[in-house]
Image (cartoon, rainbow, N blue to C red):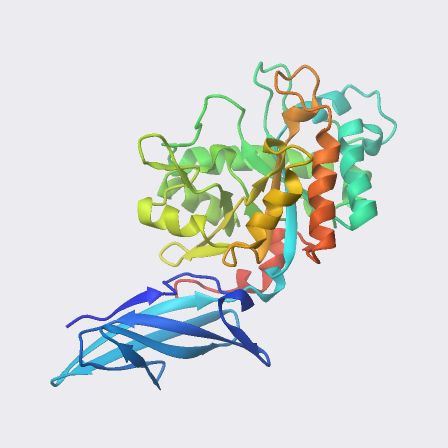
Length: 368
């Protein structure tokens, strides 16, 4: 005799769009499958049967909720258990992250700028913060692709500015370099651990410790081994961002170590927790540099129509599209970003740093 959860599933992070709020609680329908004729309860609540599918309303309180389903039939009993989460501070929030950052730091290291925000790339994000309160997370390479510049060459001249801005401007490790492609696909624990420390050490030196305090990041190409993800978990990363797609061969792509089923599921959620590893996954919902200015609002309207993905919007843009020498240079780079942020503002999404949005859950031991 077996009983299994159909919806939600273990590790799901639920929002008011998944059910209804009642005071501080969230009431969600929990659906399980059990043999026909069973008497089923979910957290002690009798389930309503429709053939072999049983549904019960379950109240979720706090950040982590254990849900237990039991089925009894002909003297036999079966039980199943899952963990469901609520990230209240993440609902109706947007996050802006910038990937592949290194060229702007190389230019700033040249010493031609009196202020960090005199640099035209960094000036974009200061304007966004001033106009919308936008908070920005930048993911850094250790070195340029040609090896001509690395983070050890970045002076600490602007450290006080970085520290002053650290409440809205954060930096984390992205990769050792842009190449090779899919750089950490088969990486062992030691490689991720070492590269993370290498980049983080330099960020702390030139920008200060507060500028690098973050429990969320997007790894370059968004994939690594389970051991590599454990290395990031060991240094304090709790949330990994990716696309959760499939390549031309149907294999998970930009999905870390997740299998096909997990990848497909994470692609349709704001967050999903791998409870076996204590790692939160969140989808980069909207890659700004892939859309025209005119196409951004309707594409975001479409995203908003998908309730399991519309609670938290992760915007992503890449540094290289800012530069005229880049083959895919976008002369309207800032306008595209501003259009996306304006849409978020108009639709009542508030800015947030993602690790702060889920900070209440950082203290939880997911393995309990």
